[in-house]
Image (cartoon, rainbow, N blue to C red; front, side, top):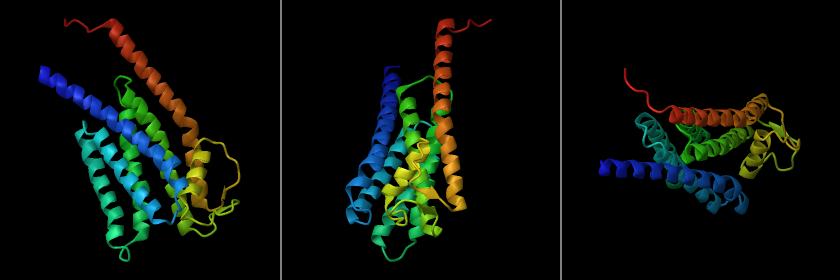
Length: 237
């Protein structure tokens, strides 16, 4: 019994620590690295690849209790990290488009897995709250990468902001993504391509609905757990 309790407490601490580490890494990826290094510099590229690997590993550790989710995110994380780091070993061989597309895909899968854990049944715990915040930041990052891919593949997909024609600068897309997600809409960067407009509409809708849905879900889970604690376990007939 004591050993089982120790293992359960260790698992809970690992889950909370992994989710907290994931949130910290996401904040660094959004607010620090893109703004302290030149977008085409070696340091910036290395920092992005290291952060991506750590983010994926933290996500793997955060869902390690759930076998099916763990296997899915582990396979996706391994494939994404292999693609990213192979670019350092084979800089002239490869497929830069595939490398760029692997980022939103892998982070999107990670976001879906975290979303399942955030919105699933159970009690309101600190790791669930951290996961809800991390998922919100992940949505902004995934859309920033999607905007960048559109800018790479579609000529003149955006207009209105000086430097918006340089798809290699991640600060532009992070800025535009979170301005859209929070529905601030300064209007200094305007989508022109149909793909860009569709992404903007979807992200704006998510930005409006996500906080309300998360708040409602957490409140309902809290109320359900308090009701269960008040009623107590039912006696068998």
